[in-house]
Image (cartoon, rainbow, N blue to C red):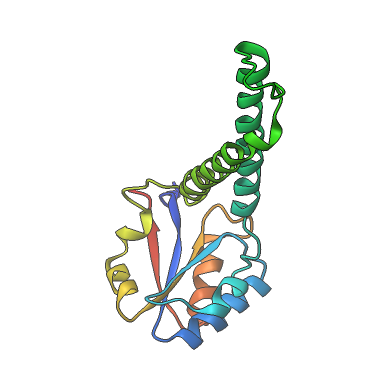
Length: 180
């Protein structure tokens, strides 16, 4: 009876310098791997493009938050001043839109900023107290002087044996990333 290998989060290759990891990420992307991530001790500009990370949804979330804040602030003031509690002070019209602008601006900025914070947390999957890559013994070196490329098992092209051979062919030291 053949025993099935235990499910894993993915395979991680360890590299010694930034040139190697960028080249490995380019090769992995060219081979068709799309669900991968890189971990480095400092930012590497070419790496995000090498792993296929091109767009970000956060600006759209902030824009939608700003529009909601703008409309919400203006409509709240309109509802209070015109519909719910109209006061005729000095003959001014109930819908005095210039007076509504400062609060409208403030609610736009407030809701856009809150959308940025909570959108960033949601898109980054935070809070996440533990990530499976922390199970790799050498991963603590990612904050010092080593570079890691992880191909996740949810990638459609992922095959444990072939992916391991591919990563070893790139010159990296390969480790399994266990789920628990």
